[in-house]
Length: 467
Image 1 (cartoon, rainbow, N blue to C red):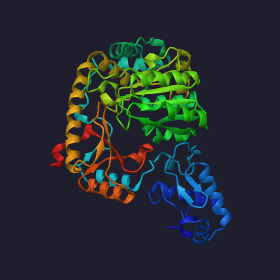
Image 2: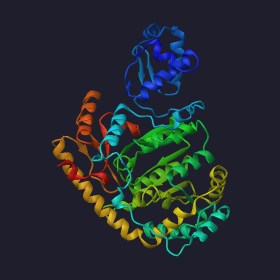
Image 3: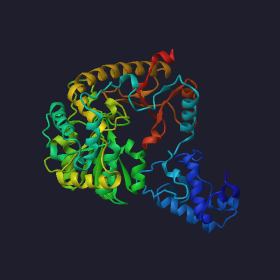
Image 4: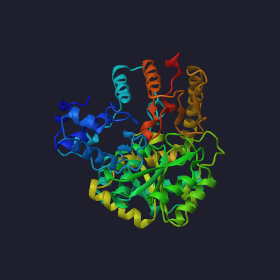
């Protein structure tokens, strides 16, 4: 594993080659979270390089947060990657390297299964199955009108006015929130909204707080922006104030990114009292909040409190992100951002310089959905997803003989569970057993979590495949 031949395959100086080798081993799963590396002396001997070169490379990896060095114990792969300021990993000679997902050995096996078998239960897929996606049609819009819309796209850089009005109505009906149309920016989804925020409101090295665990942790756009991510501990009501206060005190967190309703991956719902307490604390510390609300229309209990943090925001410190991708499918990429008008205008200008605006067709489809379909369709989704969640829980209890721990989903798309294991080897055995049964899950490590955690997206659960 540690030999000269492996090292010289990379470009750059010797210490750069060693950095690249360690990073590749971590990406490929050959070095796992918490694993101890050979000593500096052993590495120098096996790689036939100077010990000072080894020390230099390990120091750089430690500064980036990829490794941890403990006096008297050795050097370890960081089992908590929070706080890593990833230097830009774009290699202009190999541009695809950055855009490829960094896959663990398990993820590689899961992809092989997807390619080899058409009969799988892919519980790692967080999108709706096609059978639940509504069939939308445009009424009374000619191709000529579509062309004219596109020609006027510069005038519509904040979004189609008719769609923005539907979003105003949607927020009023769903949350009893009054939103001004001028504070809405239509986007191509949450990913674009987050990208615009990183480009317009943040700079490389800025410390931001996110839930631990969180899907934000694995987003390449944060890595590309060079942001420092700090995980904030959660309980069953979301992030805790103690952990938030500690992160702010230790790391001077400037922004807080939250997914408070049916959080991905845990499925937890932040209580209204907690939302207001977090908001009040952030206001006192001049910390902005980005609230991602992707699942609030999927509550199984009509009385569940799903009020956005944004509703309690009277000081314009919360940027609210809405999206329809979890309701109408990822192919119709439409979302929206609610923020002060000046912020909206500035971010729209950034987008205009990058991609010249939005396509009109998905906006028209989203308008149709919000105008004519969402109430009945989301009701049907809630019923179907709740049934699938119940079926998944019954199967989990049988398969793991009641030894698996999880919280009953309150809505959304995900169930988060803790496997009955105590070691990396046990986790690998259980995950491989699931793959043998054509079942794919998401590992907690994908969300910055510890050993034994898995996310199961029950929208794709099919009990008929497991009989």
